[in-house]
Image (tube, rainbow, N blue to C red; front, top):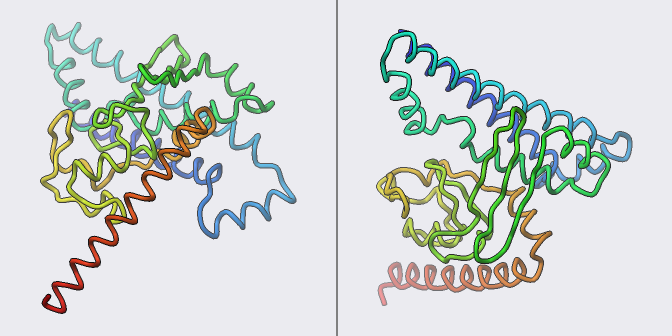
Length: 262
């Protein structure tokens, strides 16, 4: 009963965090009609400060809850002289509910670094500790120093092409790949997208199946890489576009031959 309730609580926290971060990022990197609505709104009101304050609150929220769950599990094992708490922690990881491994936390880190240089961005950095990103081609990493001296490090190298992730997606298992590389691994074409993948398609790293359908498009991380590595980003964008056009042409030619019969 105890672990069932704790699992429900962790699920609610992870769901709330991802939902709020998704909304926050849509305000910073709007798409479609939302882009024009927000531009009109910004003529009358500056939302930057509110956006930063929301980001700060979310980082504190996820850090506080992650620490609380860790302490509860550690205390449980100590009081009951068991390893159930440790096993439950492994289960959280398996269910992709490990709060500090959420791809949305990487997106918040990227948001902070994208703000760097503005007054609001400096406030974000000072509050949240040290956010840094080293896009060295050998070992590209993002480092997050969260409140309560929690240090996280994320590898930004695609395990397929062995380059800095471009147009990155985080699979449900947490592993990061370029969109084109992930599509290749899932045996779908780039223009079809990862949602077209088979439920049996597996992550190239951990071999977990069914991790493509709910992959997270890391728009803030992509924006960060675009700002820090302009020439690299432009080169990869041209290559991906060319490959997508090639795949589209081959696909529709094969469909035409199938329908016509020759």
